[in-house]
Length: 391
Ligand SMILES: NC(=O)c1ccc[n+]([C@@H]2O[C@H](COP(=O)([O-])OP(=O)(O)OC[C@H]3O[C@@H](n4cnc5c(N)ncnc54)[C@H](OP(=O)(O)O)[C@@H]3O)[C@@H](O)[C@H]2O)c1
Image (cartoon, rainbow, N blue to C red):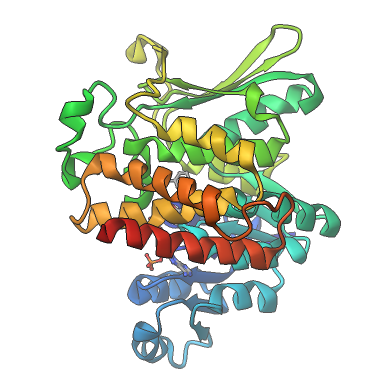
């Protein structure tokens, strides 16, 4: 029987790839019953009509009237507002939720999916960074499966099919190094928006592309890996691998190292999360090792990319530190994209907000926070980051 699927963030980079995968799998395997987006109401309407899905959710009130007019008479239900994506999951009761909203805005719908015991295919890594233990407990108590969509975590998940997490010596996350891999600190100081958006190997949405340039994306992934696989921070490493062919590796206690390789194509981890434990055929670029010729690896330069150091500091502090880290990054990255902040100041702002939180922020002594404490820390960090930007 077909799995009933809801795609959150369907108009984005991962969302569109997910729709492609669903179309290719066919309606006998996957029935898309709901779609949620932020602002792009036209793209959302086209997706809903072409897939014949029953309900859509749009966060942005400004597009509501035009979306309703476009879908009038089609039988597609329209829901609008910041809570619309969560409500969509609640009403449609899907078997599978593919969560690809970007940022902490994706959290409420992700928690809703976990509380309904759905299979949660998680691209929205921020949910785990912000509320890892809360999400993990909710999923465990309602029997929800948490499957990674991030290519690195999918690689680790696939390698872990041949050994348990108790047998893991080390998780090794690969990082392309981003567009500024070989740049000096001095040169990075004047990096432009266009240079930061020119990722060498992956085509992605703007937020994650800037995070790949600062290596904040890898920092978020270290935290994501910790909550997803339950492996202590000291056993999670990052290595730079510019070709983005080895998607990540697991070193087991017996010295065996398993890696997952493939051309960089997000449809591969998306489809694996949707069809797991089975694999389905997928047309990708040929995997030609002779053409790739060499796979290279180098250590991360934490001096030039301090985001990686901060990830381990966040995991040491636990509690609400992940929420503070992510929220400060969302604000600082937005300021860089708007031309209000120099590139190195993104991570410097995140560090300043983390430091300020350690001194006097809300919930800084909490080790097992409630959701409300996490959300309060998120709000506080956004205000503190905005204060830092004004200074
Ligand atoms: N892109 C990749 O290759 C990749 C790889 C691994 C992991 N990820 C992760 O996947 C997530 C999405 O990344 P992306 O690159 O696909 O981002 P993106 O292209 O910017 O897409 C984000 C999606 O979220 C929607 N959205 C934003 N706010 C929303 C809200 N409040 N309610 C409902 N929908 C909302 C956007 O809608 P509108 O566009 O209509 O405003 C869009 O559909 C991020 O967490 C990212 O870290 C991405």
